[in-house]
Length: 295
Image 1 (tube, rainbow, N blue to C red):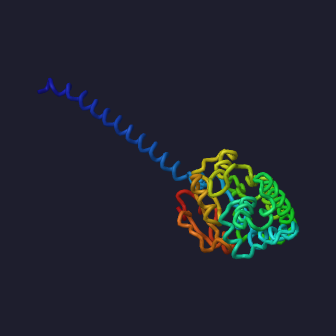
Image 2: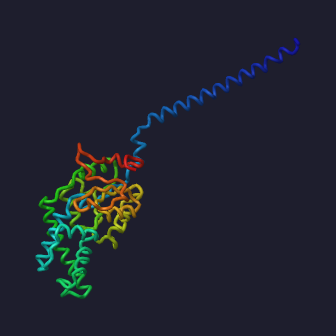
Image 3: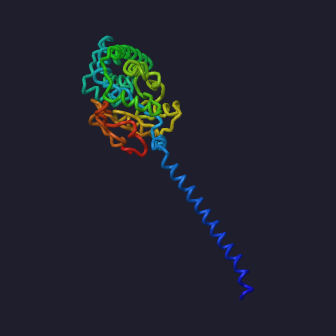
């Protein structure tokens, strides 16, 4: 027994050394875990949420930026008809029906096709001549419309300027996508949002072959801006506009306008009466995250 005792001491010593080594590794592991946890806790929430913000906020123009349809476009269409000696007048109800056709030239063509025995289709029968006449009418109508815009007769809808500012402040791109004449849309942006006009590109008019409800205008905007359609939020006011946005794979918020109050917005991601000015907001930019308050 006496001879065996000295041999037991090194084994016990080795065991104690092994235990100390394991303990040291455990302590080191806990220290690393603690530092990692502290680092995670120190990460600002804002930095994490930036990945969820929309890359772009895309506005329709008519009925979204301004209530242009009833007291702007309709009025100047009628003035143009009168100036050209055409016995047509679009009242508020009729124009509401015609808005189902996207684009001013397309709208006039659709209407004239429905009354072929009246001027101008009664006298102008050649398809190319009809197309040229409609272009001429629409050009004059656009000039009259811009006069109204420059007079400040068509104010911005509540919350538009606020939302544009919030989007740009958060690093999102902002643009306007419309079926209307490019000069008319650019005129509204330049006149009503001059401080942001150089950062709000306009995609409008005949820049794409197919107008809303086709998604072409929104596809073009996403490609040009270099953004992912799935991370774009569109602000629209009509069923055909909402359809175009959803067909492009984008989120769509609807702000109902005078003419679109009773339209079907079942495909919209959110529906409001307006965006709302500061202090009376219906939605703020930071609520448009994915996931967020509305999706």
